[in-house]
Amino acid sequence: MENKHSITHVILTGGVGSRLWPLSRKSQPKQYLDIFDGKSLFEMTVDRNRNIADKVMVVGNIDNCHLSRKVLEKSNTAYIDIIESTPRNTAAAIAFAAFAADPDDVLIVTPSDHIIDDMVAYEKAIQEAVEKASQGYIVTFGIVPTKPETGYGYIERKGDDVISFREKPNQVSARDFIAKGNFLWNSGMFCFKAGVLLEELKAFHPEVYEKSKLTWENNSNGNLDLALSMDIPSISIDYAVMERSKKIKVVSSQFDWSDLGSFESVYDYLVSIGHPVDENGNMVIGTNNYTAFIGVEDTIFVYTPTANLILKKEFSQDVKSVYNALARDNSDLLN
Image 1 (cartoon, rainbow, N blue to C red):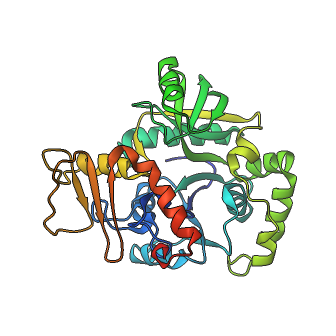
Image 2 (tube, rainbow, N blue to C red; image 1 turned 45 degrees about the vertical axis):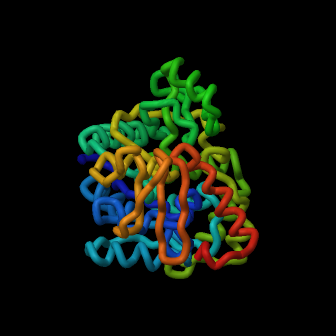
């Protein structure tokens, strides 16, 4: 991809995938599980953007940086490593990446745990975003929705202008968004010049800007100081910049996309690549042991050596409540 600006792929690796417990644990979050075509989502993210960007930057944390390093060393991928001592949400994570880059560098910021198919459509969307970013815009990627999904946020738009960002809706609102035809799923992917993002962050949330800057200036080989980090407000990039800046554009994207944020989305993806289900739509994940389902349908059995989960597919979002209950008990089953 030809572009006069250097392009850096920034991979955000925070998050523990709590809705995919017990597969996803603090010691092995979902982005590092090798259950997707024999690769991890993190590895697929690196590979997907290998021919698009000139550099790779990983914003991770002290709990998962060794997992990222293992993947990147296996593929001999040079990268810039930013290691957060404590999570401070996406505004700070993206600010660190921007401070680590040259102001005119174009950053493509992606989570590390998404599935994306149709590389032709993906690279077309990236090219469009890079062009807009080169003109001084902050670009977000909106996915053309295929159903009234309640697990994603939405972007209301007119052309490439953003009218509003919407939180995850209920079923009635999701159907209304689809019917109106000008709503896109919010992918959580962004593209911008580093300097432009920092200017907008400084204008709209100076405290995050100043304290992230101080923390970055005091980094040691990419490792960020805990005390300084704790002083940074924990706020998302959506709240800090995207919902307030007048420089926002959206690229309407046609590629197949999922954030695999629930067992329902994992189920749908695994079915699409040939993972077995029985005649009633029941699925086993995590074991080849013979498993029989009687009197149930669309049920998922998730096996791990220390914990199992059985759920109806449509109740996938409720796994978070199990995770939260274990967290209240400081359970070792989260590790």
